[in-house]
Length: 277
Image (cartoon, rainbow, N blue to C red; front, side):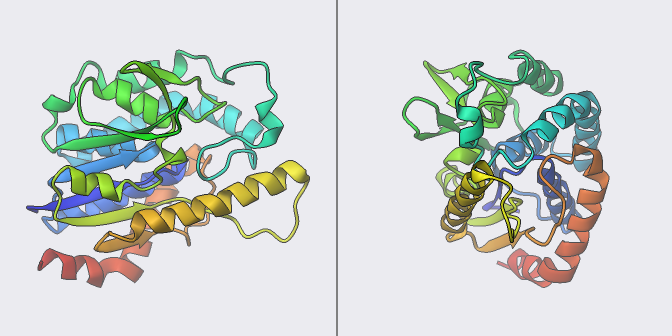
Protein backbone atom coordinates (compact mmCIF):
# COMPACT_ATOMS: atom_id res chain seq x y z
CA UNK A 1 0.00 0.00 0.00
CA UNK A 2 1.60 3.23 -1.16
CA UNK A 3 2.67 5.53 1.66
CA UNK A 4 1.90 3.02 4.42
CA UNK A 5 4.50 2.65 7.14
CA UNK A 6 4.48 0.02 9.88
CA UNK A 7 6.43 0.61 13.09
CA UNK A 8 7.12 -2.61 14.99
CA UNK A 9 7.90 -2.22 18.67
CA UNK A 10 10.17 -3.91 21.19
CA UNK A 11 8.89 -6.68 23.43
CA UNK A 12 10.88 -9.93 23.41
CA UNK A 13 8.85 -13.03 22.56
CA UNK A 14 5.70 -10.90 22.58
CA UNK A 15 7.12 -9.35 19.41
CA UNK A 16 5.85 -12.37 17.50
CA UNK A 17 2.52 -10.54 17.57
CA UNK A 18 4.05 -8.57 14.70
CA UNK A 19 3.75 -11.70 12.56
CA UNK A 20 -0.02 -11.64 13.06
CA UNK A 21 -0.12 -7.95 12.07
CA UNK A 22 1.93 -8.43 8.91
CA UNK A 23 -0.05 -11.53 7.98
CA UNK A 24 -3.31 -9.59 8.36
CA UNK A 25 -2.04 -6.66 6.27
CA UNK A 26 -0.83 -8.97 3.50
CA UNK A 27 -4.21 -10.73 3.41
CA UNK A 28 -5.84 -7.33 2.86
CA UNK A 29 -3.27 -6.37 0.20
CA UNK A 30 -1.97 -3.63 2.48
CA UNK A 31 1.72 -4.48 2.14
CA UNK A 32 3.65 -1.62 3.78
CA UNK A 33 5.97 0.57 1.74
CA UNK A 34 8.11 1.44 4.81
CA UNK A 35 9.02 -0.69 7.83
CA UNK A 36 10.77 0.38 11.03
CA UNK A 37 11.62 -1.79 14.00
CA UNK A 38 13.03 -1.69 17.50
CA UNK A 39 14.57 -4.70 19.27
CA UNK A 40 12.41 -7.76 18.45
CA UNK A 41 10.50 -5.56 16.04
CA UNK A 42 13.75 -5.07 14.13
CA UNK A 43 14.18 -8.84 13.71
CA UNK A 44 10.70 -9.41 12.31
CA UNK A 45 10.59 -6.15 10.37
CA UNK A 46 13.94 -6.83 8.71
CA UNK A 47 12.91 -10.32 7.65
CA UNK A 48 9.73 -9.01 6.04
CA UNK A 49 11.46 -6.04 4.40
CA UNK A 50 14.10 -8.34 2.94
CA UNK A 51 11.84 -11.07 1.55
CA UNK A 52 8.41 -9.36 1.33
CA UNK A 53 6.81 -12.76 1.90
CA UNK A 54 5.14 -13.64 5.18
CA UNK A 55 5.56 -17.41 4.74
CA UNK A 56 9.30 -17.04 4.30
CA UNK A 57 9.39 -14.82 7.37
CA UNK A 58 7.54 -17.41 9.45
CA UNK A 59 9.97 -20.14 8.39
CA UNK A 60 12.97 -17.98 9.28
CA UNK A 61 11.50 -17.05 12.64
CA UNK A 62 10.82 -20.72 13.36
CA UNK A 63 14.52 -21.32 12.84
CA UNK A 64 15.30 -18.32 15.07
CA UNK A 65 13.22 -19.74 17.92
CA UNK A 66 14.58 -23.26 17.51
CA UNK A 67 18.17 -22.05 17.64
CA UNK A 68 17.77 -19.47 20.39
CA UNK A 69 15.04 -20.80 22.67
CA UNK A 70 17.18 -22.87 25.03
CA UNK A 71 19.75 -20.14 25.64
CA UNK A 72 17.22 -17.32 25.85
CA UNK A 73 14.90 -19.22 28.17
CA UNK A 74 17.80 -19.98 30.51
CA UNK A 75 18.79 -16.31 30.53
CA UNK A 76 15.31 -14.93 30.94
CA UNK A 77 14.41 -17.24 33.78
CA UNK A 78 17.40 -15.76 35.56
CA UNK A 79 16.34 -12.22 34.68
CA UNK A 80 12.60 -12.68 35.12
CA UNK A 81 11.24 -9.51 36.68
CA UNK A 82 14.65 -7.85 36.57
CA UNK A 83 14.54 -6.37 33.07
CA UNK A 84 12.21 -3.47 32.52
CA UNK A 85 10.01 -2.78 29.52
CA UNK A 86 12.58 -0.31 28.18
CA UNK A 87 15.30 -2.95 28.21
CA UNK A 88 17.27 -1.62 31.18
CA UNK A 89 18.40 -3.91 33.97
CA UNK A 90 17.32 -3.18 37.51
CA UNK A 91 19.79 -2.16 40.17
CA UNK A 92 20.21 -5.79 41.19
CA UNK A 93 22.30 -6.38 38.10
CA UNK A 94 24.09 -3.08 37.77
CA UNK A 95 26.78 -4.22 40.16
CA UNK A 96 27.73 -7.32 38.19
CA UNK A 97 31.40 -7.56 37.20
CA UNK A 98 30.65 -8.94 33.74
CA UNK A 99 29.69 -6.91 30.68
CA UNK A 100 26.96 -9.35 29.74
CA UNK A 101 25.33 -12.59 30.84
CA UNK A 102 25.41 -14.24 27.42
CA UNK A 103 28.36 -15.22 25.28
CA UNK A 104 29.24 -12.07 23.32
CA UNK A 105 29.13 -13.97 20.02
CA UNK A 106 25.75 -15.63 20.61
CA UNK A 107 23.61 -12.71 19.45
CA UNK A 108 25.64 -11.97 16.32
CA UNK A 109 25.86 -15.64 15.33
CA UNK A 110 22.10 -16.00 15.74
CA UNK A 111 21.15 -12.85 13.82
CA UNK A 112 23.70 -13.34 11.04
CA UNK A 113 22.45 -16.90 10.51
CA UNK A 114 19.17 -15.32 9.41
CA UNK A 115 20.34 -12.27 7.47
CA UNK A 116 23.87 -13.23 6.44
CA UNK A 117 25.59 -10.41 4.55
CA UNK A 118 22.37 -8.76 3.38
CA UNK A 119 22.48 -4.97 3.29
CA UNK A 120 19.73 -2.41 3.71
CA UNK A 121 20.07 -1.77 -0.02
CA UNK A 122 19.00 -5.39 -0.65
CA UNK A 123 15.57 -5.01 0.95
CA UNK A 124 12.39 -5.05 -1.12
CA UNK A 125 10.81 -2.55 1.29
CA UNK A 126 12.64 0.48 2.75
CA UNK A 127 13.78 -0.43 6.26
CA UNK A 128 14.85 1.52 9.34
CA UNK A 129 16.18 0.07 12.60
CA UNK A 130 16.50 1.98 15.88
CA UNK A 131 19.29 1.39 18.40
CA UNK A 132 20.51 3.36 21.43
CA UNK A 133 23.99 4.84 21.73
CA UNK A 134 25.27 3.37 25.00
CA UNK A 135 27.56 6.35 25.63
CA UNK A 136 25.29 9.29 24.83
CA UNK A 137 21.86 7.73 25.36
CA UNK A 138 20.69 9.04 21.99
CA UNK A 139 18.60 6.98 19.60
CA UNK A 140 20.05 6.23 16.18
CA UNK A 141 18.19 5.26 13.03
CA UNK A 142 20.08 2.82 10.82
CA UNK A 143 19.07 2.46 7.20
CA UNK A 144 22.48 1.68 5.75
CA UNK A 145 25.15 -1.02 6.00
CA UNK A 146 24.64 -4.65 6.99
CA UNK A 147 21.22 -5.59 8.37
CA UNK A 148 22.74 -8.08 10.84
CA UNK A 149 24.84 -5.35 12.47
CA UNK A 150 21.88 -3.02 12.99
CA UNK A 151 19.56 -5.78 14.24
CA UNK A 152 22.20 -6.94 16.74
CA UNK A 153 22.61 -3.38 18.00
CA UNK A 154 18.85 -2.89 18.31
CA UNK A 155 18.43 -6.21 20.14
CA UNK A 156 21.33 -5.96 22.60
CA UNK A 157 19.49 -5.84 25.94
CA UNK A 158 21.91 -4.13 28.37
CA UNK A 159 23.45 -6.62 30.76
CA UNK A 160 22.12 -9.61 28.84
CA UNK A 161 24.25 -8.83 25.78
CA UNK A 162 27.36 -6.70 25.41
CA UNK A 163 27.01 -3.33 23.61
CA UNK A 164 27.49 -3.74 19.86
CA UNK A 165 30.29 -1.72 18.19
CA UNK A 166 28.91 -0.02 15.10
CA UNK A 167 29.61 3.15 13.12
CA UNK A 168 32.20 4.45 15.58
CA UNK A 169 30.15 3.95 18.74
CA UNK A 170 28.60 1.19 20.89
CA UNK A 171 24.88 0.47 20.78
CA UNK A 172 22.29 -1.28 22.93
CA UNK A 173 18.61 -2.16 22.70
CA UNK A 174 16.51 0.28 20.66
CA UNK A 175 13.68 -0.09 23.17
CA UNK A 176 15.66 1.90 25.72
CA UNK A 177 14.94 5.13 23.82
CA UNK A 178 12.29 4.25 21.22
CA UNK A 179 9.90 1.43 22.02
CA UNK A 180 7.80 1.90 18.86
CA UNK A 181 9.61 3.78 16.03
CA UNK A 182 6.63 5.66 14.57
CA UNK A 183 8.54 8.91 14.05
CA UNK A 184 11.27 7.07 12.16
CA UNK A 185 8.70 5.62 9.74
CA UNK A 186 7.72 9.17 8.79
CA UNK A 187 11.37 10.09 8.39
CA UNK A 188 11.73 7.30 5.83
CA UNK A 189 8.83 8.64 3.77
CA UNK A 190 5.66 7.06 5.14
CA UNK A 191 2.49 9.17 4.90
CA UNK A 192 0.32 6.92 7.06
CA UNK A 193 1.75 4.89 9.93
CA UNK A 194 0.51 1.90 11.90
CA UNK A 195 2.25 1.68 15.27
CA UNK A 196 2.37 -1.73 16.94
CA UNK A 197 3.09 -1.90 20.67
CA UNK A 198 3.79 -5.34 22.15
CA UNK A 199 5.16 -4.19 25.50
CA UNK A 200 3.53 -5.25 28.74
CA UNK A 201 3.48 -3.81 32.25
CA UNK A 202 2.01 -6.35 34.70
CA UNK A 203 -0.30 -4.99 37.37
CA UNK A 204 1.30 -5.76 40.72
CA UNK A 205 -0.24 -5.79 44.17
CA UNK A 206 3.00 -6.54 45.96
CA UNK A 207 6.74 -6.50 45.29
CA UNK A 208 9.21 -9.22 46.20
CA UNK A 209 11.99 -6.78 47.05
CA UNK A 210 13.29 -3.28 46.37
CA UNK A 211 14.74 -4.33 43.03
CA UNK A 212 11.37 -5.66 41.92
CA UNK A 213 9.90 -2.26 42.77
CA UNK A 214 12.65 -0.42 40.86
CA UNK A 215 12.06 -2.57 37.78
CA UNK A 216 8.29 -1.95 37.96
CA UNK A 217 8.73 1.82 38.27
CA UNK A 218 11.06 1.70 35.28
CA UNK A 219 8.35 -0.18 33.39
CA UNK A 220 5.87 2.59 34.18
CA UNK A 221 8.31 5.16 32.81
CA UNK A 222 8.63 3.04 29.69
CA UNK A 223 4.86 2.94 29.36
CA UNK A 224 4.85 6.72 29.10
CA UNK A 225 7.51 6.51 26.39
CA UNK A 226 5.26 4.16 24.44
CA UNK A 227 2.33 6.56 24.59
CA UNK A 228 4.53 9.37 23.31
CA UNK A 229 5.80 7.14 20.49
CA UNK A 230 2.28 6.17 19.44
CA UNK A 231 0.73 9.65 19.43
CA UNK A 232 1.43 10.28 15.74
CA UNK A 233 0.31 6.88 14.46
CA UNK A 234 -2.90 6.90 12.39
CA UNK A 235 -3.61 3.47 13.83
CA UNK A 236 -2.18 2.48 17.21
CA UNK A 237 -2.36 -1.26 17.86
CA UNK A 238 -1.83 -2.38 21.45
CA UNK A 239 -1.42 -5.96 22.60
CA UNK A 240 -1.63 -5.17 26.30
CA UNK A 241 -4.37 -7.80 26.72
CA UNK A 242 -1.93 -10.48 25.54
CA UNK A 243 -1.16 -12.17 28.86
CA UNK A 244 2.14 -13.86 27.98
CA UNK A 245 5.47 -12.71 29.40
CA UNK A 246 8.22 -11.29 27.18
CA UNK A 247 10.58 -14.22 27.82
CA UNK A 248 8.22 -17.03 26.76
CA UNK A 249 9.84 -18.03 23.47
CA UNK A 250 8.37 -21.48 24.11
CA UNK A 251 4.88 -20.04 23.48
CA UNK A 252 5.45 -18.31 20.14
CA UNK A 253 2.65 -20.12 18.28
CA UNK A 254 0.23 -19.21 21.06
CA UNK A 255 1.37 -15.58 20.94
CA UNK A 256 0.67 -15.38 17.21
CA UNK A 257 -2.71 -17.11 17.57
CA UNK A 258 -3.88 -14.87 20.43
CA UNK A 259 -2.61 -11.76 18.65
CA UNK A 260 -4.59 -12.67 15.56
CA UNK A 261 -7.74 -12.94 17.67
CA UNK A 262 -7.05 -9.53 19.25
CA UNK A 263 -6.76 -8.05 15.76
CA UNK A 264 -10.07 -9.63 14.72
CA UNK A 265 -11.91 -8.59 17.88
CA UNK A 266 -10.62 -5.04 18.26
CA UNK A 267 -8.83 -3.69 15.21
CA UNK A 268 -10.43 -5.27 12.13
CA UNK A 269 -12.67 -2.30 11.26
CA UNK A 270 -9.89 0.21 11.91
CA UNK A 271 -7.54 -1.65 9.59
CA UNK A 272 -10.23 -1.76 6.89
CA UNK A 273 -10.86 1.96 7.33
CA UNK A 274 -7.16 2.67 6.91
CA UNK A 275 -7.10 0.71 3.66
CA UNK A 276 -9.49 3.29 2.15
CA UNK A 277 -7.20 6.26 2.79
